[in-house]
Length: 78
Image (cartoon, rainbow, N blue to C red; front, side, top):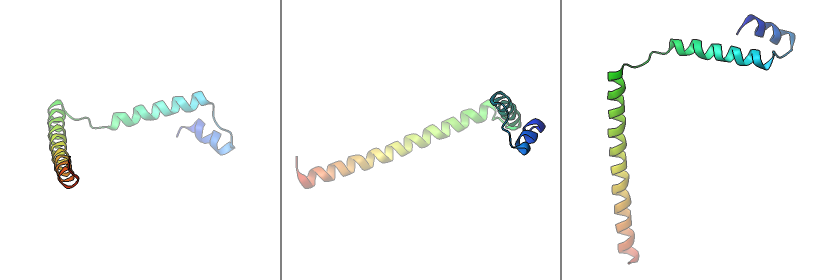
């Protein structure tokens, strides 16, 4: 929190919306500088892992859907 913002908060007055916006953007930028970004190779590996997982889960759900559809059709007829 900046000194101006801290003093304004202690006085009970809210700082100007532009000051708050500026401080927010500064804080976001400072936090983004702390982020450890993945390398391109890591990003490709993570993307492949996620896609494979999604395909596996979609296949499982499709198999359940097909099975329950077949069971329902056999019970209640077509």
